[in-house]
View 1 (cartoon, rainbow, N blue to C red):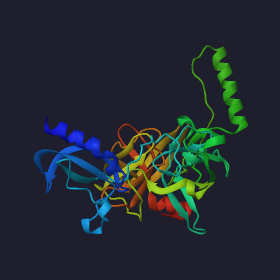
View 2 (view 1 turned 60 degrees about the vertical axis):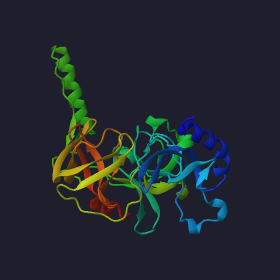
View 3 (view 1 turned 180 degrees about the vertical axis):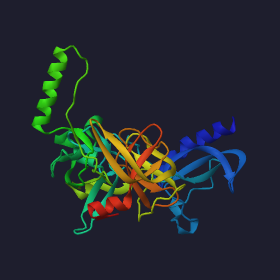
Length: 334
């Protein structure tokens, strides 16, 4: 009988007893290693939540050196949990998962912040994710997951819109009745004359400039949100952006991605469907996102410090508000 067959029989015979140990979460077969080096033999391995020095274990918790003549080993694997998709319903909901105003598709829950005045825990994301690009009202429902991922107001309302920084659009559809009437009349005349050209009434404000696309939502139940961000953990403090700084983000669509800051203090024109807005003082990295990642927190690559808030991009670049501007504009802290 081969070593692996002998080990498999021993594993079947002793699996139940080994799994009765509360620190053991699995049993299997592995290559026996001593001081990290393979010995060429097969062993029965106990997968434990955490390794504990032998002196700190009760006699009944000690894994025997061998079972039925087959050597054993102990490997730490942590707590094993079923993975959920970022587009699933999460309770508690961490940063990096699907969220959105009840009238939009879906964006990303960035991180939990604290109100400077009250200390309340609040959800941070973009205006266009939580406040529907200025079209929302305070206390509108915020869903997790967002509508695009199956969220429903009656069952998946995680929070209510708390406040947002309005976006000042440099170009947007006209709200002036006279301007629309003139455009309609001109288009009727063009149609009568056989022209294929049409006029569109727009509102233009060349002086409109923004620093952030940001909003907050208040959880209905504070226990329903987590301070952690998927694949990053808990952030603490902030770090100013600098050229070449390694960074990462955890988003609803592309998960954990990393890169480096390539541009700082950028002035950019960003399209919002039929509107345009100019932003100053922005951060650019290489392509680290796709639609649905808006609202992700940008975190330093070698620390747990926040750097920015993702809000826009293209196939060539991703754009972020500096986190210091976001926190100041919303009167919150990490």
